[in-house]
Image (cartoon, rainbow, N blue to C red; front, side, top):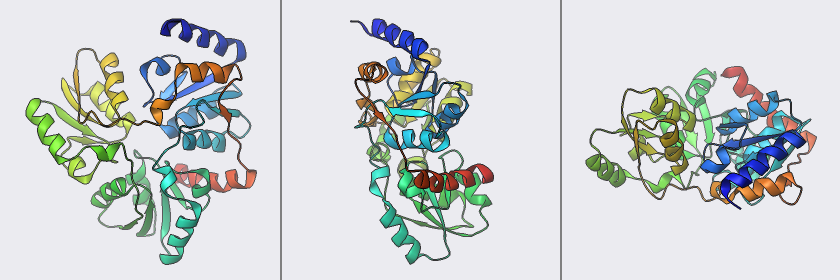
Length: 304
């Protein structure tokens, strides 16, 4: 069977069973093409809450599917590949955060959206990479305990010098694969290209970027910019998607090693078999856990 034939089978099943498919931007092109919505983790959760379909299949990683379930408890939510996790989200657990709160009493605990539902239950406010600066700036408390991405946290500290931000150790293994030497090398090869970097990148990369923002922000910047050449400092799938969306522009990877292996676990066959009941995992959360996790997401919406 060819890729297009399997895509057509999935599209037919989607209509027959009234299923909504969500794909994170780091998914491969063939999966993005069969999705109803593509975007970042929180954006997909919002779309899921608005869609009329009662069954949702998430093509991404576990914490994203949990976030969909947190905001849409009445819907049946599946993770298309149950093995797809987020190494950064797995670096902290509820006990680590609770211990840090004891060590830093009086601090407002802010968690990145890239955390498990359990971790969100012991945090005060949740943020995304695109909303973090605005939300933390609006928190009355100047003392902030931020987790788990220390590189995003370092970026926030530079943007918000008026805040005392304490960072827990952690980070995205995909984004730390690029460093200063990569910037120097690619800029020497493409001197007219603009560097667009994710704030999860090392500070030595983010500080040299022409634009620092979320995956959605990077895509929008590249699409609307008058520039014609761009170095993409995030997961390589973004480069591929931009090539399709902006065929008149040129895109270069900051590093060929910026690949999220967990995102690449999901295949078209995973999606198909999830729709036929042969694969996938339904995401279930205890109602107490869901409600407590939702509180810090509600605070993000309130502040941002």
